[in-house]
Image 1 (cartoon, rainbow, N blue to C red):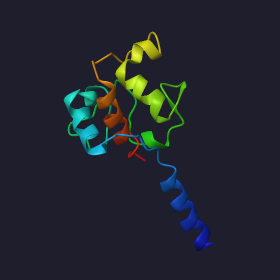
Image 2 (image 1 turned 120 degrees about the vertical axis):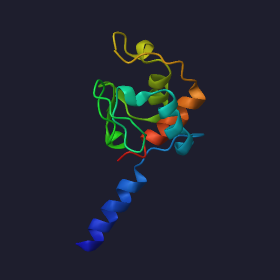
Image 3 (image 1 turned 45 degrees about the horizontal axis):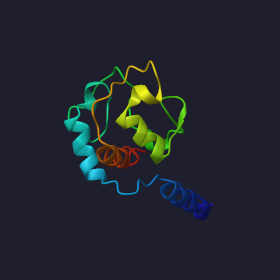
Image 4 (image 1 turned 90 degrees about the vertical axis):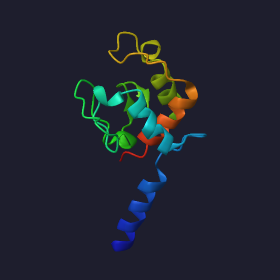
Length: 113
């Protein structure tokens, strides 16, 4: 039984999304810079206690982004770069995030489990 529990823990760790070219430490700093915490609560991001958007504390375990996109790197990066283009009518604004910055931000978000 203990072996199966340990195997399950390892499987969960292995299932964490990897963002090619993404730097999670830089992504955390970018989440501060772009003031994502004004709308979201984000663990590890200073002053990120917003409640207008969903909490991102378990983001890496979510199946979907914005309720409709598969939570894998490519759609997530597109979402961070230009939310209204991906989901018209969303309240999440286009903040001028570059694709490179979005990859780093995504890399950090996937650490939140």
